[in-house]
Length: 110
Image (cartoon, rainbow, N blue to C red):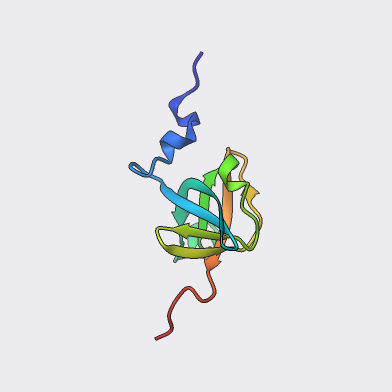
């Protein structure tokens, strides 16, 4: 019996379809590339009586690529640089969550 198509995460995360390509940097050195989904929640989520505050952006990507990131690395999404603020966290489905924050000094104060 063959594997379902969705088990090939590269097909699911194809930048021409649904995903985004990100580059990972440690200091000035590029350490890899990851396909994933960028999420920057701006509102509270209500689940019945439970309210979830999502406080920062995150990048959901496949395990092999996402596990190479470390706290302090920089994720570059089409020129937008974000700090990785925690070591990667597996979500149990083959994906890794990278918690992100706006990189210090990456924006110009007006």
